[in-house]
Every structure is written in C-alpha cells, then in structure tokens.
Image 1 (cartoon, rainbow, N blue to C red):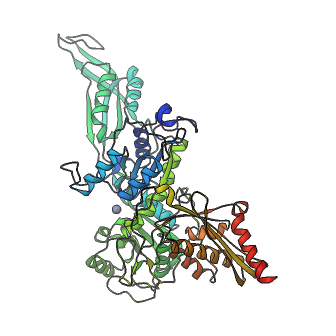
Image 2: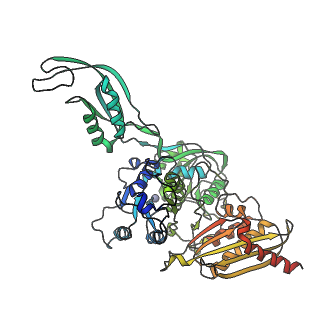
Image 3: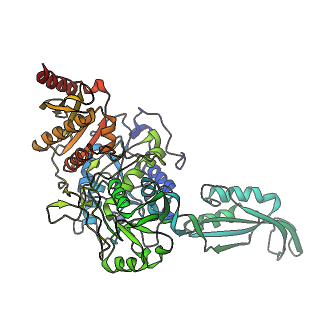
Length: 598
Ligand SMILES: [Zn+2]
C-alpha cells in the first residue's frame, strides 16, 4: 500500500537514521492515509502533537544500532510506561489513540500531566502523533476492527461522517482545461474515497469585456468577447482551501479567472462513527456478551437486557457511545456494545427494548488500536518496525473482591498486526454470565475476576529484566502417561529454574496447558514482570492469545487459569516456536515420564 508514496523508499539493513532519512512526516502521512485527520471531530486534536515533521527518524534499538529500522510504537495513550518502552526500543515515534494534549496547555512544564509527558517526549526525541476520532471513523479503524473481531456482516457506519469538503467550480478555456485539472489534482483536489483525479466538466460560453488597461489571454481589450470554456468542478477538503484556490488562479491562463467555492453538506456513507452489522446467525445476549469478553480478553463484561434474549443486529461504538441511545439506535439494532453508559441512559435503552453490552472504554479501544497497528505496519512496510504497547492503566476499575474487571495484559505483538478480514473463532475464557432478567443497569457475570495488572514498575535497565520461559507438555499415547517441562531463563540465557513433573494420564493438550501454568507460576513466584513465553503448541498459543475458540470442555478451566496467570504480568508475549527450538523443555518432559514409568 502506498502511504503518501514516500515511506517505502528503502532497503532493509541500511542505516535508516543517517542515510535514508525517513522522517516524522512519513509516519504522519501513513497515519493520515489510513485514518485521515480530516475525519476528526471539530473539537478533537489529531495529528502530530509533539515533534517536527522534518525530523529524521533515528534507527531503532536500544543504542540506535546502525542498520536497525526506525521503531514506531502504537499505544492507546501516552504515559510514562509508554515512554519507558519507547526508550527501551529506541522508538522515534509514538502513535496514540487518545491525544496526549487535549485541553490547551498554558505552559510546557511539569505543572500538568500532559505538559510533563509532552516535555519528556520532546526531551527524549520521541514524536507523538494522535489518531483519535479520525481513527474511530476510518475504514479499517477502531470500530471496524471490533466489528471484524465479532464477525459482524454487512457492516456500515452507525453515523455517517460529515464530509468537511468544499467544491471549486472554475471556468477554463477548453484548450487549457487539462493543465488546470492536473494542477488542481496535484494540489490535493479531486479525491473521493479511494478515487483520485475526480472532476466533472461541461462546455459553455464565457463572455467578457476587457477595459483598455487589460491584457486578456483571449481576444483584445475594449471589445465584447465570447470564449468557449469548460466548467470544471472538483471537491477538496476544507483545510486545502488556500492551496487549491491559489493553484487554480496560478494555473489558469486568464488575468482574472472566475471561480466559485461552494460549501458541501454531504455525508460520506462509507465512513463514520460506530458500526452497525449483523451476526452470521442470531445468538443470545449472554453468548454475545461472552464473545465480547473474549475479544477484549476480559474475564467478563456486564450486559443489560436479559440473558436469553435473541440478538442479531449489533451496533458497536468503541469508547463512549451512550449518546447513540438517545439518537434512536434501537430502531436499527437489537444490542449496542459500548462503554461509559450511565444509569439513566441504560434505563432509556431498556425502555426502548435495546440490549446493552458494557465494553469498557479503555479496554475496547486498546484492543482496537493495537490490532489497527497491523495496518500501520503494512503501510510503512520495511521502512519502519511497528511495535505495540499495552497501557496497564486501562483497567481503571477493580472489584471489591480484589480483582480488576479487566485482565488486560496479555501482550501479543505478533498477534496485534492482525490482517484485515482475518477472523479466527474466539470464545470467552470464562463461564457464561448468569442468566438474570434485566435489572436496571447490568447483570454481573459469575466469572472469576482477573487480578489487577501490576502498576507499571520501572527499573533502570529495562533490557535486563525480560525473562524467557519455555514450556512443553507431552503424553505417550493420547491420552497416555504425560509429563510437563518448563525452563525459566534470564534474557542473557542463564537458567533460573526448571520444572519437570509427571502428571499421570492426560492428553497432549492438557499436558501443554499444565506445563504453561506451572511455568507461569514459577515466573510469578520469582517476581518476573516482563516475560516472553515460548511453546511449540500452536493451539495453546492461539487459544491464550484469544484467536481460537476453546471447544474442549476439559481445556476450558485450564485455559482460563492460564489467562488469569498471564494477566498478572506487567508485560507478556506468548509465542509459538518450532519443536526443535523447544528442545530443553521437551527433554524435561521426557525425563519426567521416564522417571515415572520405568
Ligand atoms: Zn477513548
């Protein structure tokens, strides 16, 4: 995909920082291409918030290692943990969904949180680009990502975006029409959706009488003239007004070219806030709530409207979308999935017969933006490496039972760049919410709550505190005598602890899960907070990353236990490796089975 045409200008392995000169503006162009800033709400602040478009991106890597592609880090919002991660990765740009600077800053100092973070980003040479309501509305943006994860079909925007566009109508001698059109296109006019060079023309006659002081391009002064002209129409975004009109005047052969600029009241049917779609087949509200929880990697979500209620038409508004209730979303949808719904809004929904699923604001947007990061990676190609970071702070609420509502810390970097349209089956990792008839706001599901993700603990040398865990489980016969193996290592390759246990008769998958659980427990006991886990079971990797449904009833509790343990790390990646790369854990498995059976 050509993102601004400027981003893919290089060959991997070169010293990007100093030779290729990829600039902040190239990343801005790629973000703008995917989620046009012009789509943002008028009150919003999007685009570059810290940094200079002309700055060259330094090479990625801790010490700006020569040859490493620049790193672009994608996160829900900018906080200290994100900037710590940017420093660790040598990232030159952070792309965040929530704008770092939203209310105007009076001073760039530590007096305000936004000022302090902006100052820190600037000091550390990290540019910050915000893609907020622009990303909400964009094709393939926030709402589309969530709609895709829920397998919605026939998806359309819930509220079409206003096209903040103008139209230029110009009158050009037929012979000059081509030249003028080309100049207008080069200035950015004539783009409609994915189509460029859009214009419309019709022929007619122009008349004029030039006074003695004139020097007309056609005819002579002091005489009535009639010239064959084309009326040319092109649309363009409002922000390009000066550039487009001055380009028109400069390209036009006349001394005083006539033109009109007309404001448009169009909507863009294919873009806008929220999405409306249909489930492939009707389901119950409780089942859909379970799916939403799984997609968001939560142990449960609240819903309102009766567990057994059949739903099919689904409206999704990531973030805060309760206004849709007053706007009559009940007329087009059976259920609204959104966050930040207040009591009276929920009551209004009930009165209209609209079911609600409470998808927590930050958690939903975090899943959305991290998966969107894959599109940004495609757009930037090999010119930059796109990394993602999970803000721990999105889980703002805790249960009085001691757990957080959100278990939002299973990081899966290789998983985030999810291709458009790739929809793995997903199922909740938790038991179904208890079927209660609609109380006022929501039914609390009976699922076990996940513990709160830890606060972003920062250490001086972040590179050294990332551990590696290799786990493997195996059975001789399926089921058969089974064993588990796990090896916890430092990033430097020192073995911290081995696990080698016989677990009796079990299936391969059960053994794989038990090995993962044992390994994670060892790592947690050791106080590990940042972990890379390696397994050779693709099934388990995909299930814990929320990409495969857990269909086997025997695996469900193990899957849930593993997910809860994963949620207790500050940062954790679960990755698939080939069998040969997991030899140490495999040997521990065989050792355990041999010891027990011989
Ligand atoms: Zn938000």
